[in-house]
Image (cartoon, rainbow, N blue to C red; front, side, top):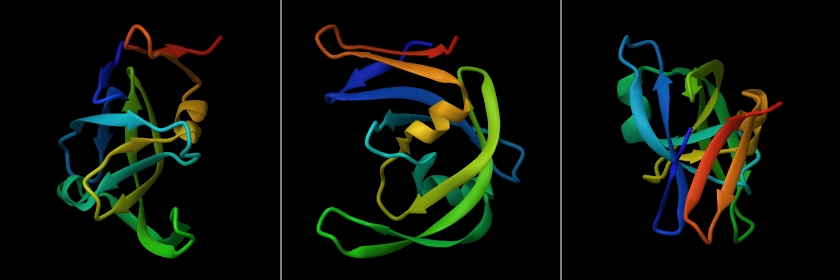
Length: 123
């Protein structure tokens, strides 16, 4: 699966589904520094009907703690889907974490000089 390199950020299109029948196709930034699964904003999460499972805290760059909702839903990358946890935040940013790619058994290839982003099945 080929992605894109937009505004110096590697992005791929993924599918996200909650309890509503429609699956959202969204472009997400692959964040190698995020060891979670997926972060999406309220504006994307609420229409999907993701199932709320709790609230967690995370530490931001200045060392302070922020709370966020944790939901479950189905996430699909390159035709492979899993039921997983999804962090919901007020910020209008969508991030894919390394744990999601690991669980999907995907390899992330980034060539900044050529602007190439690729997601492959791991061997």
